[in-house]
Length: 71
Image (tube, rainbow, N blue to C red):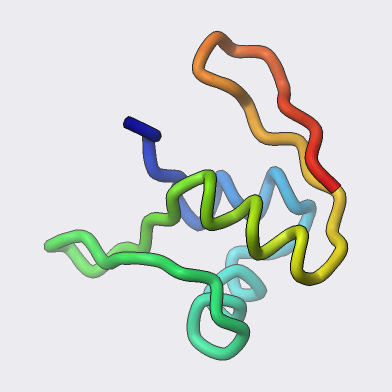
C-alpha cells in the first residue's frame, strides 16, 4: 500500500507553498483525505494523476528511496 504524503511533502515535491497545495485540494480537485487531527494526506497515485492533468513534471520518492519522474 502507498504511504500517503503530507501537504508539506507535496509542496516540496512540486516546489510550491503549502497554501498552494491546500488550494489544489479545495479548489482544483486534488483528492485528499483528512486525518483525525484535521491534516490532509494525499496518496502518491492521486498526486501523479493531478500532475498529469495539469502537465506538471514531478519526481516522487519511491518506496526504495529512489525518485520516480512523472510528467
